[in-house]
Structure formats: C-alpha cells, structure tokens
Image 1 (cartoon, rainbow, N blue to C red):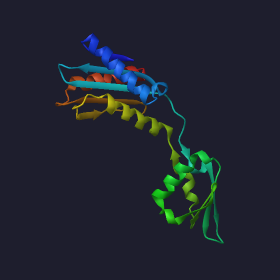
Image 2: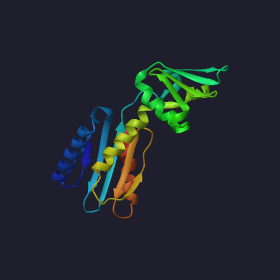
Image 3: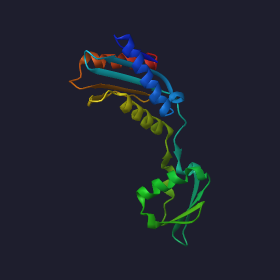
Image 4: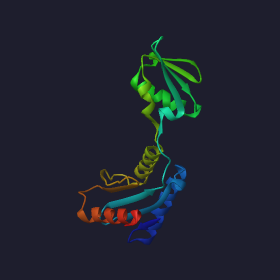
Length: 185
C-alpha cells in the first residue's frame, strides 16, 4: 500500500482510514495492492486497487440439473448445491413471477414450459461481487464533497479520480501511472 501526499501526517491518516475501511468490509485478503494520491492543495483523490484473482463464475448448470418433462410441459430443476438456492431463485424471479415457480421441496423447482436453456445463466460471479465490494470501500474512502468522479478501472484494477473541480490531465496521468505500476507494466 502506498499513499502519496506532500503532508506526511495526512498520508498516515489516510492510510489508517483505508486500512480501517478494508478491515470493516473484510477486504484485506481480496486486494493485492493499492495506490492512493491525495493533494489537499489541488482537491484531488486518486485511488487504484488491484484485486486478487477470484474463482470463475458459476452457471446454473453447474449447481443444478435441468430437465424438460414433455408429457407435463414442465422444466424440473434439481438443486445439487443448496448454497446457491438463493442465487438461483433470484435469477428465476428476474425472468418469471414468483407464482410461476413451484417448489415442492428444498431441492426441487418446477417451471411450466421448456426452460432448459437456463443452464448457461450465471448465478454467481465472485469477480463482480468483489468489484462491487471494492467500489463500496472506495466511496467510503473518498473525501465527502468529491462528487466529480472518473472511473478508469480495468479488469482487475479499480481506479478512480475524484475531485470537486474539473479533472486535470495531470491527475489522469497519475491514475494511469498507478494502473501501469499495479499491472506490472
């Protein structure tokens, strides 16, 4: 972790704030590295966070068996991993009303019609979940009043430039430097 600020005490304070927020949100183990640039004279805050690699997205077909029973015109879903049931129901409720989904027991769901094509739908994406949690941390870290925000994130490096003025080219260059450092280029 590197916090750049011309004021040594200010850098220490922001480092403490960042560590506390990461601890509160249980993000420490999910982040490889972090760069922050704070300059109170030019009201700017640049933050770049490199995420650790996450597991791959989980599809419907990986945690449930879908079969179409032509005689009844019903798609039967047998849940293999009950841990994903809330995510499965959430995805189904996006596509169907709650009344259209019949659940005779904990491990079985039934939907009228042929819906075996659901097996390729992503029901859990650890990468997106981690990104969302990191953005939550960033918005807690940013100074209040810094409403002008430029998101310069790449796939595994989340980077924002925040200010209460127009964003200067030098700040974007600083963010690009951090992205290059964190990506090892």
